[in-house]
Amino acid sequence: MRIKAVLFDLDGTLLDRDSSLALFIADQYERFPELQAVDKEIWAKRFIELDQHGYVWKDKVYQQLLEEHQIEHISWNELLEDYLRVFQKFCVGYPNLHSTLSSLKNHGIKIALISNGYGQFQHDNFQALNISQFFDEVLISEWEGLRKPDPAIFHRALAKLGVTAEEAVFVGDHPDADVRASQAVGMKALWKQNHASSTDVQADAIIQDLEEVVSYVWSVSAEA
Image 1 (cartoon, rainbow, N blue to C red):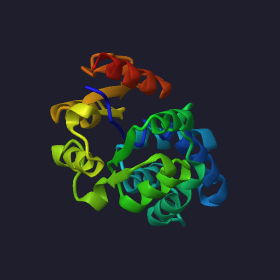
Image 2 (image 1 turned 180 degrees about the horizontal axis):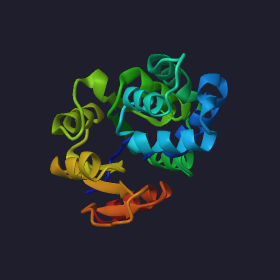
Image 3 (image 1 turned 60 degrees about the vertical axis):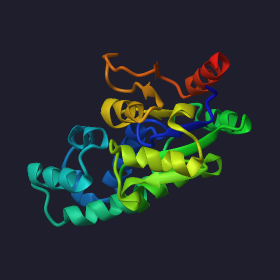
């Protein structure tokens, strides 16, 4: 069957979140003198450890950091508010992001985003990548009242696009919330392998670069 739509996760798939976070941490450290009681490299390393590739929300990260380093005269709330407001300025996309989306769009492929996270924050980060013109639909979990791996959010996106699950591919970096969840509703799933060295993920294909999405779509469509 010809592929008519490609749906993407955001963090770790389109947005190089680790690189973006490193840039933000360095900037925030320089703007808040209270943090400079700790060595910059030590602060950044511990922040990244606690963050766990974005799976720990920043309220917990900041509370832990301030407690561990006994930093006073600044609250975790203030740092969190700054994160929410400023992070978007440091958003970096993965290589071949724009060329991949442009190629899909130019060949009539519908494109959608399904992202877990806080609505406005994720939307701001998405907008910062300057890719919204390529997308037909954007679904963010807080605004949808649904969250991956719930099959309902995939079904909602497919309905909005007007395609069946068999006509769609999902691209994401999480083995469960992205790969297994999208396959469970009948979609083909591509695993964007970023951190894990293991390939023990039963994806339809494993990719390291976004441009591989295009070649996969063409190869599957050619078999139809």
